[in-house]
Image (cartoon, rainbow, N blue to C red; front, side, top):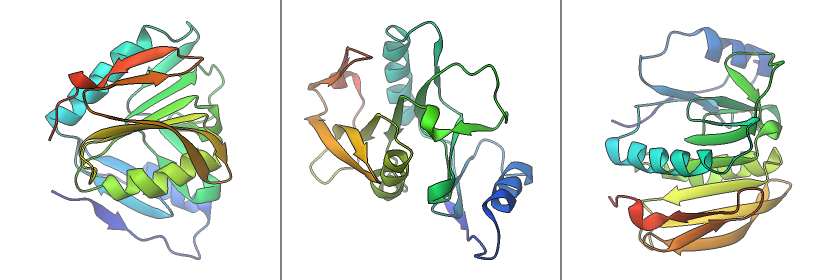
Length: 194
């Protein structure tokens, strides 16, 4: 099953688009995001996708400060890019004064992780990467199971405008180092391949 898209009316304000995203009854179990002003409804991720997310989540929990959290279903708001994005994994300091239960400002994130699915790889590689950089998120880890070069993991950092600098790219099976504040090595050999 591939993603369903709902185009944004150019006359509609960001607040109206977010209200529609929050109030609409979407198919249960689906992932609903606003990507470049377009509402995208995707099926829930497949088993191998979830295995990768669970392994990264577990490793991150072992190194983050006590006042940070690792989330798998929390949306990030990026109004400048008309985005309400739900990364596969999000690391952010705990917020006691959250304005919305459905999302937080993307600028609060320290790390986002996207794991490509065959049907949405382009969004993860291009649109979401640019939005996360524009929001100033320090690190973006793209686990690209469908890369033309074979399965790879790429760590991006040092965002400037809507562009990241590539910090490292490793093939599945090679160790991936996340720098401070994580100081964590992820064994990509544990990731199932497509």
